[in-house]
Image (cartoon, rainbow, N blue to C red; front, top):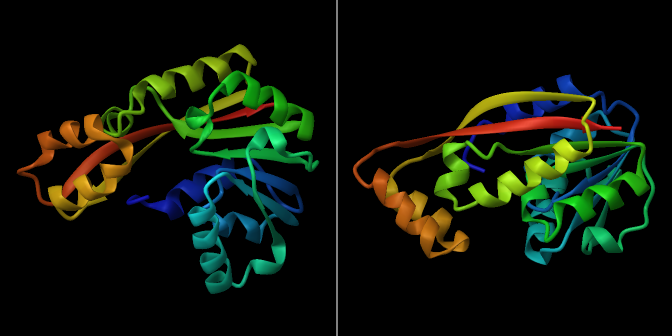
Length: 199
């Protein structure tokens, strides 16, 4: 994520106290939020992307946090680990059925924290995730979250070429949408996101 990850972690840990908790972190591959584990007792990191989990291993070793993590290469619906809280790390919108994912998460822990893009986020639009973000937001709303807080951040890229390279995995529509930033240097795209607590 080309954004201030430290700020996202601060917002997340101020929103929910992970101190001493057993955390089931969904979409944890890549390891952007590994510093969260300094508060937690244990983190079960779940990701269906093996390459992302390999990145996580590298980040854990660099941060000295390997002993706090258990890694699972799996789909969330296959997971049976129990914890104090399930954390969705910017991934609920990627689930085939956000409703089903939230229901299963609720069977694993008494608290579910969803950190995800706002449907109105310019970044979600550019990355061609706006419709997915709407579906995820609707699924969260249906579960009557106890608390929600909205935040603003930015995705920052040195130039259009770096942005286009980052968006290649998102598909042709995202690459086309990135064209509006062709003349900007650096490229700064607003990224609105929400944290919600379901319990």
